[in-house]
Every structure is written in C-alpha cells, then in structure tokens.
Length: 402
Image (cartoon, rainbow, N blue to C red; front, top):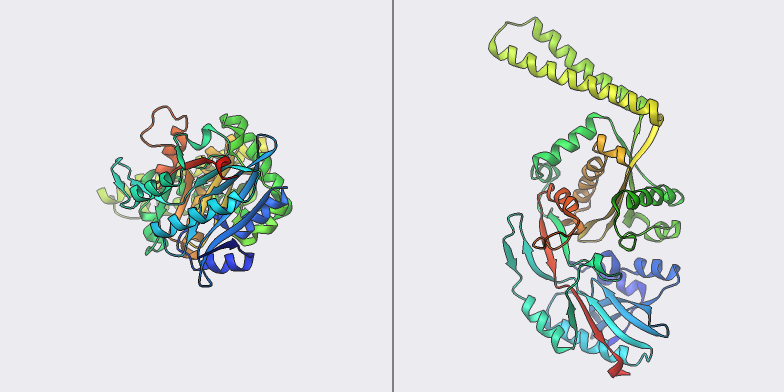
C-alpha cells in the first residue's frame, strides 16, 4: 500500500465510482477552502495503482504556531471495510508525523453508527463497534459534543430521506400530510423559484444574516458564500430563491377563482342531490379560500413591493446525496410556505439526478433534551425520513509523533 497526495483528476475519478461521500471531500471543496486562504490537500491510500481511500485534510491554525489536521466526513472508500480504515489511519498518522507543526488530528468519519426512526427505534450498524475499536486502537478519542457547541466540530446526526428506487410521485406520497399541504399552499399562491447566479450571492448572504438575527442561531454554524465559491462548485451548488411576483400570483389566483366559480355555476344547473350539495359546499369553501389568498397577495405586495424575495436555500449535489445545507428566510416567507416550495422543486431535482438520499443534514441528538433546535427537528420530520447517526467527532494529540 502507498500513501500519497492525490491529484484533483485522480480524486474526481475515484469519487465518481464511490457509493457514499459528502461535498467536503471533493477537489472543488478544497479549491474553495484554498481560495479563502486555507491550507489543505487530498491524500489517499493506493493499492497497486488503485485508490482505495481518500481524504481531504485541512491544516488549521492551532495554538498560534501549530496546526490541527482536520478531516470532515472522510475518508471516502471504494468499498467500506474496517481493514482499509485501519490501514488508512496507520498511514495517515505516519504521514502527519513528518509534518512537525501538526500536533492535533480531528476526524469525523462518514460512517454510520445507527439508524433512528421516527418512533426513536434504534437500529445499530453491525460494524460500528469495530470502527470504534479501530479508532481507539489508534489513539483517537470521541468528543461527546454536538456540532453547535464548539466551532470546528461536524454534525453527528443527519436527517435523511431515502430516494433510491422511487419515482417522484412515490416520494411525494411518502411525505407527511402537513408537508404536502404546505407545498400545495405555496403552489396555490403562485410562488416562483429561480436559481441565483454567482454575482447574486449577496441576496442569499443578506437573507442569511437576517435569519441569524431572527433565530439567534450561533454565527459559526452558518456559512456565508462568495461569488468565487459558486463559480468553483458550478452546477454542484444550487441556491434556489423563492419569491412572490404580484402580476404572476394574482393571475394564478384569478384562474383559481374562475375555476371554482365555474364549478359552482355548473353545480347550480344540476339536481339538488345530497352529493351535489356536498360538492357545492366544497367548491364554495375553495372559492372563498382562493379569494382570501388573492387579497392576501394584493395586500402584501401593496406594503412590500411588486416583487419580494422570501426564502433561499443552499444545496450541494454529490453522486449519492442531494444535500440541503442551510436555509435563509424572511419572516414573511412563512405566510406563503416559501421554504416548502423550494423543497418541492429540489426533491424533483434530486429524483431526476438519481441520487439515493435527500440529505437534510444536521440535527441534534433525538434523545437529548432541551437542544434548542426542536423547531428545526420538527420541520425536518415533516419529510418522513429518519435520523442517521454517524460515528461522531474524534480527536488525537499528535505531539508524540513529532
């Protein structure tokens, strides 16, 4: 086995054939990090010319004159095997040992500890204990902290929804009733969605700042983007923006009003049966609701403007995941279920891309009390997925290797 620095082309080819990896491990993510002044590289374990494991390593300032080597959701394997993980860690420690300034290693493997369903039934991964032992044997200690408790830690719990083997109709049918209703609400209001271009990134950043101020979330858990970052990631990174445009929404609602009025008029010509009476009541209620939405749009646009941005989200695609990384929304967006409109579109794109997971990223430990993000967890639970618990964050002081 050979352990060495890999080229971007080698990593791209390796990742294209790998089953599970997150955006943090791509050459584009390294380029973004370096564009912001960071130091890093992608290293790999190579067996007879074939890459069997790779990892992007960041070298971050630590205690002024030293460095911390950090691997986020890596390494990536061609086939996940404890033996390969063991060999990778051995080679990595030797490699880092030759870099005299590095005195700490942090690692958060993209390996599953357990699956936790909505009823909090836990299904442990049978290999988790083996990986725990390997990490312990190599002197790595697990940090019992959540990602939002210390800067630099990675999320140990993801909320995900499996898409593999399902078409879009099947995926939508599997969402909760509440989720589907919100998506219908956004559609009835005639919300529009477009993708921000790199030179429009400030629209997202300004909305993100407003969200931080509104929610009180820790500043270090959000990621403000740059134009260069969007250009580097290209089509892998998407920023869908949901907005309301007066003329379009009013037109959509006028069609709804006309449609329900026509149904009422038609029912008025039919027999006065109990069935038709029930249909008339349903049509009358729908007509009233459409008129109410129409007035709501007009009143909102009279006070806010003819075109109003409501919500924007950041997504990154890999071969295995459509990853919902972060979302920004103004308070007014909740009137129109704008964030759900974005999810509806991105579920469509995820199915079209053929990824196996709609990955809604970080949540807190579902068994912990008073985590402070109950609303986030409840929102994500609307998508009827499950919590994927990863092995967690590990740390080792490397001074003994120097």
